[in-house]
View (cartoon, helix red, strand yellow):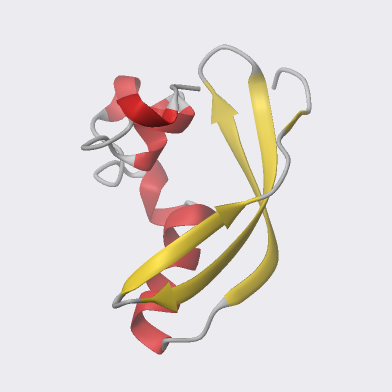
Length: 93
């Protein structure tokens, strides 16, 4: 994962190195993004104003198989704040 100073201006799937981002197109613009739990969680919080707590999120990392996080969202100063818990690789596949 890129150091924080290198992530400004990049989409989350690019920063997390989701395998779909470079293969299918830009993060947020691919068919796979339609069912992305991270994207849907952020959108749900933005639309409803209700934060989410402890949502499990797993995605296919481009080099390390699947990675799993726990995510929390909330509205802060007119934007969605996304907090990600400890990552754990779950193996290839």
